[in-house]
Length: 359
Image (cartoon, rainbow, N blue to C red; front, side, top):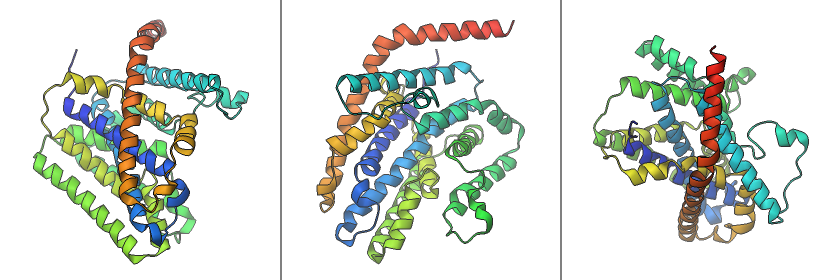
């Protein structure tokens, strides 16, 4: 069995932690941070940075998968395994909260059985499954197109989806929205990951780190300027940009973050590789639609911290670490207890079905 690279597995862990602290900001601070208030400008500046860094982490996380998948064959089991894991967590969490007498929205037959995944809707899972389904066609593009053609495709999609999206709405026919969706955006990330795998060999870590640091400092500079100008219109526009997946700054930092870890040399580390397998579980647990509402609205309330930026970021780090560690422990238990009983059995059934379908 081929050993996984620990440098990219470490990036998987770092990215998921940044996603958790991003959720602390976007879900736990949404009440007071969505519009500019001069009295809490510093805290809102930190909030904006956490929004951006979380979206960059999502891009880095997807790039890891795209980087490896771009040179692999399509396997139906990848999609089935993803859906099974999501299904198991969705129902375990739903039933646990029901047994604990939490008030949950009633589920109609439609909400209960469609669309997948059930009963909690995870946008990331849907977009990732979409990417996996189209993986053979994306790999065909990477194989058949020249280097210049792939660069042109990536450049055109970046202009359409990352730049034109954020130009003020004075364009004819809403052309900046053509064909954009989160699902399609994952295909752009896939092409970038595949391009890096095919053409970008290991570079100097110094070069990659410099690109990452420069990108982060540029974003911090923009946030400081917006706060200094003390005008809500600029803050609102920056918030609208940083809160979505196709933010150009998020893409730049996400790619730079991926390149930095790719260029690292880390010997195979069993602990890192083992923990990294739980990162998808961390996402499914803490960002479950029911858990999200309870966690960020009932258990954790950051309203009192809006005037205390240091306490806001300190609490965010502490809470995120606690959530991260607890979710890892839960997922390890699930992997040991449930996966050994169910997942392997489902894989056998999938293989039998595929063997039968080829006859």
